[in-house]
Image: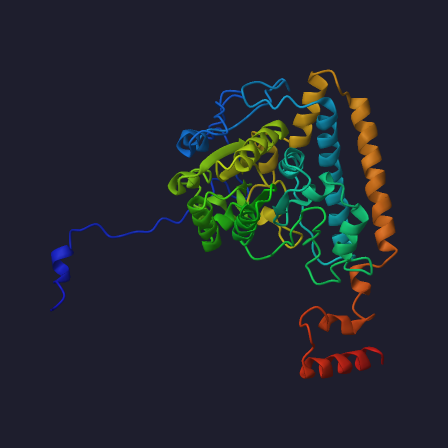
Length: 422
């Protein structure tokens, strides 16, 4: 059969592709007035046992608790006690100070790489507060707040960053890819979206064993475009897995904005609709809203009502990593224009609004946190910084790979040790 004469299609429109572009580029004045930000307290709260379909309107809404006056409103108010609020604030401040000091350490050549979570501190810290200490997390590289909120020693975190003698991972991970089973923090993977199928598989195993623990998987907005995301969603939906799946939509994936992953077409929370599972879209800069949403999803999972996909709507205030210069692809003042504000300042304002905090106590606490981080850094650096590593115990690079070291690797180890000793 011959092809049709192209002239018969001469008057047909030419096919085109759409390439998403961010609204603002370097030099532009960012304007987020087009974003629909519902008033705090206006989003209804579904019952944790409700059919998944009843939550689907919440995938285009935005769960918010803290009003502009710092006071909580609406059905999602978790009514937290003051001690919990103060601990969350302290943990968030500690995370930011920790990030700043490790960023400077990288710039000083003490380590090779670091990633900050500035502007996103409320998400990990509030999630940690909402879950049981026995629950497992499958995090990405921007959930250091989970470890800090669970009391993981700062010195040990820094030893992993420096890959020094105190590093329990023995330098086998990138500097910020922490791992600690006792604190429910699964080994971070640099591959995108692997956390979701890992979390779903762990939760399936827990259900098969009749365990009472649940887990939470974490990805960024860009990782939702990976196949692993959809494989995990399918398994979670089909088997009604007791898992919380969190997508942190901070607007940027490395240097590409969220539209490349589909944000122009729908919210990331709306992906729950196609799979028939519960979904929530949450103000990620509102610590109370984050706590309430995670608590809700946890209760749903523990009661065998199925998985929940949560989109935390936030903004990555700084670069993707120390290897990234965001001024090359977005306006330098875009973070300040973000309409949901600074999560630390918002929680601080809440405590002040209810008469349980003030600027003097906040300054004193910040100074204490700073001293704590400084002391931890001093202790960890006594064990060495990254550029000093690599010559001692060089043969250990061959350990923990095979139960029995093959002959050819044994020869390589002997050679490496001999050359390293010269």
